[in-house]
Image 1: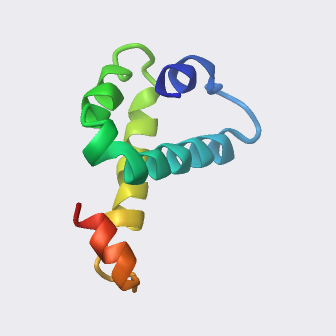
Image 2: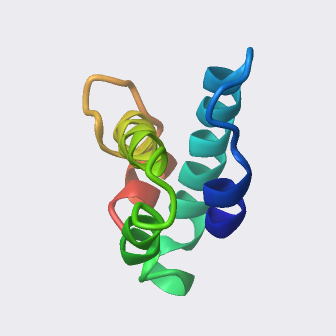
Length: 88
């Protein structure tokens, strides 16, 4: 998914921000489900794509922002189950 995104997300398009936001959201949900057990190299993989495509810096920052919103931010109310999941 990361390789596909770094090669196929357009640089200039009418809906490029929407595409990038959905891509970041997709990677974040994969991160939530897979990071600690099945994908410990998530951040290494994410960083490696920056060199392949300069616009991936924007994607990197979007993914970090979305991870903050979904996992880290304490200002967003979460269920007990979400808190336990995020602490793994």
